[in-house]
Image (cartoon, rainbow, N blue to C red; front, side, top):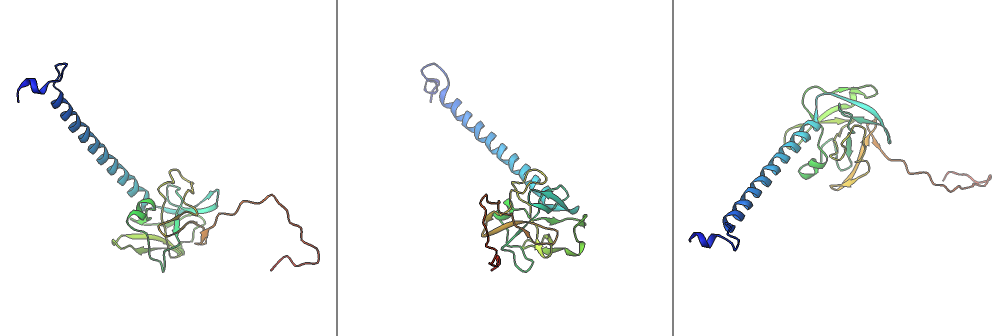
Length: 188
């Protein structure tokens, strides 16, 4: 191949430039993807490590359990007998609250209800009243409850109350009124 074959009609080296441009773009894309993956993994690990206090925080749902950063903790309706049913891609969206050090009960949280369960990978997940606890990837700020009532990975997700039960979002009040005759019983 001679020099004329490598130049376009304007006299530029066309084939070599576009091939090197593609290689550079692919390399940059791969590097950005790797950096994003490492940053996301670091954020997920730090958000799910429990070595602080499980507390109560007032939210639009009322008072719910939160981690030491104020992020809402959730329970998964599919979990049975204190064992987690959330792993793989589920655990990416609903990171398990893992124990790394001592976990303490904040004001209003019963220390006797805190515990742990062993996950399939051997790590220890924090439980409350035998419910494994999870964060939610879309709760970006303290006090958010974006995971409440979601149906994902085969079950419903709920914020957890101080009693260790699901916080069920109250239905919005209707604007209609019902009158009950004075001689009838309002209870079934």
